[in-house]
Length: 597
Image (cartoon, rainbow, N blue to C red; front, side):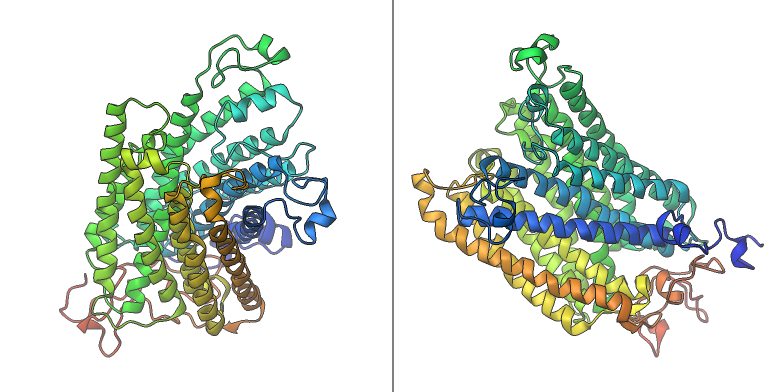
């Protein structure tokens, strides 16, 4: 075998498996691992969405039995004897919804699934640098998912301390009662963290060391650039989460006192507890990870959008170098803003001012991206295909979420709206309205390459319209609730006179949320039906210029029989050199005397 060309499939670093187990279960192929992440995270998306529907039911109709499910499970799990959500069950719902959606849906979906599938194809590689580690990272995530599911089945149920698991609420419970639900949840988060670390290491080495000849840093697609910066976040920030989770488990199981002050525990646990823990230590350590994790959630989405918009605007990305610099700037600033989550925790005002200024500064590189996206579509020959509509929705929703984030960055404002529905509105505009719409964009854009078939475009248009309408109807009014002082994680407004006028809003939001959830059935049907029965796809249905569209569908096991040589950038659209077409593939050599970009 030569250095560049595979003479036979057996020459590949890990030959194509022929048995079911090694082809679909324990696979080293980055494409199969990506699909494992994709299917698993989509299953957890259904679970997380179902938990959200139960939350909204209780808020809109306090104490009312949940139809069908409440009668079936009354007195068990999260339900009381009447089939309604219990007080403890509601807190468990709120806690597990956040944990599932962040650690088991969004991160593995945009990083584990699309990162695994696209990075080797984008850089002209046959696989990731460490295929075995890649398989291990998925199965750690899978085991972590089993632990999360098991936490619902133990006698006292799963975690009930919010998705942030602040001590002493998350700490003392395990020391004073026989429940293991919280222990299972923290063990799951611990394993999911290591899965993320292993994936980050793999992506960094792959992008740095395995790029095809001519694939310089400035010729990398923006998706791969975003995954590169995200991988740095994963490797540097996630160990803090692992350390915090381990310390919390030690407090709960071994009765150490990292986070619990002396005198809080009772009984035998109090006798074993000899030190003076510091609850705010958890907040510092947790948010040092969790705020960079917000960018783990959003940066790949920025990358998807930055590659999809040029393909359907038929022009190069506006300000590519500025886009890359802004990615790196977000990474640097992302590590020094965690304290804005603690403005109401008794933080020193001067320290709070430092965090406030750094948080406001992080809006600058985000603003650069927004203006560059708008500059990309300005004057373009727009093709309003489903991926383009989803990507444009990402931009719009990111603007709304970003603007509300600036308000919370200001300490005087945050003191008032902290822990209110204003925070929920902001976070969901960023993580659902932006990130999940970008996932829909990426799925519809790369579906032909992943599965060799096309999705039904009519159903995609229907899903986009319904999701766009009902998302905004569900989450935009939450800004009004937050401004009125409506606290989050509040199972009923009964007994709070100033919140009584908010009851109609809560009912309206719940109806919109149920319609939003129902709208996803359209996408689920389209996705599953298209995987098995969709129209066979063409190798390059979007006439895109990045490397992955130069190989056949379905993608061969070895990706590239001959490693390509890259001559130009990732967005070669509307170039005079392309005539009579309006695009040139990255591996197309220069024509005549015209220099390649």
